[in-house]
Amino acid sequence: GQQLNQSPQSMFIQEGEDVSMNCTSSSIFNTWLWYKQDPGEGPVLLIALYKAGELTSNGRLTAQFGITRKDSFLNISASIPSDVGIYFCAGNQGAQKLVFGQGTRLTINP
Amino acid sequence: DTAVSQTPKYLVTQMGNDKSIKCEQNLGHDTMYWYKQDSKKFLKIMFSYNNKELIINETVPNRFSPKSPDKAHLNLHINSLELGDSAVYFCASSQDQGLGQPQHFGDGTRLSIL
Image: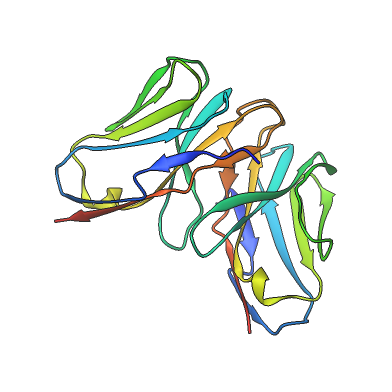
């Protein structure tokens, strides 16, 4: 099946630093979604992207839908302790079936 | 009020047993899903129902049987549990089948097979 390659797999940063992670695919996707999963909970939607080139912000989070429709990135500015968690990209190609990336585990040192 | 709720949160059972996981959503959504998250946190869709009708059935052993009594509920029954079934199972829902509809997840059911 289709796969999304998400990188990096893990990040260890200091509080206050900016974070950047991305997702790529060899196939075109029609939508890109970014989720965050906290321990013991389900993924929570952060940002949804629907058009190639679209740049969307949600507070300190910014995500972009790549112009080729084969990639997306998520940036977090001025990280805080509650940003810790696993971030997933997910893409949708046709039918309502989301394909997920492998996740980026973010750890923040205070 | 929890939007997508799953029960139980934890399920520990022996190999060979049959078990069920229940899911309910109070969002008024038409479409519901079951996902499996393995120990490496990889999320993979198993099933999807739209208004009680099966629309996605990934390559899942037929020991797994979803049932949707109404559009607000999607339960998952697993027969003859195997060690490899140990995982976290997530239920999710979306407004409808429309492309790119955001999916809302429950908090998961942690299934451990002894």
